[in-house]
Length: 281
Image (cartoon, rainbow, N blue to C red):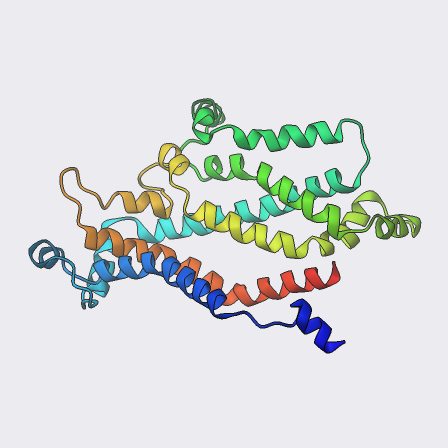
């Protein structure tokens, strides 16, 4: 039996090409970060005179201190944390609720409504900027973080993601058993749907957090220069006729350090949750 499994490929270890491709993807993903740190650790005058040195310089801390003194860094960092965390939590909650309804509840027009939600992903974000700005202006939210958080509290991709996951991962018999025990619809979602959706919700929270953290277009339009998020604040490092790339890229490195810390501290838990969900499924 063991030989048959090995012959079928179930217990076969990855070959040389698999590891080679994974290493190439790893280096390709890490190179932009290394490149930013490489330029951010050098002096602007030395770069203009001698070109880029492939050995890191010793000016990163000095450049980072200049960045922190030049822009409202700590305000922007706090704003990015508030916005990214709030949007990630709200997207997970509302998308999981909507996904549970589309996947497991029977109501008229369910499929058509789901298709309409998915179809909104084909509409470019830029087309809705003008009416969205008018709405935020009439609400008096322009310049505040609410103007960035409220429009992103639920996404069509999140609803589609959670619908597809719950449709396959959550058996209908389990919901019926909980309902027969006296649980309400919200109770069945809380005790059955939410635990089953945890692996997909964790990945959705991570993707949403990263996308919100790096979002530049809408925060640049609606927020004030004195109350920006980090990507908008880094834009203030560019002068009208001259760009100091050592300062800009050192600021970029500072802005991605929180994302790296999120992966370091939460990556193992996310992978464990995904594997647990896969085993249960």
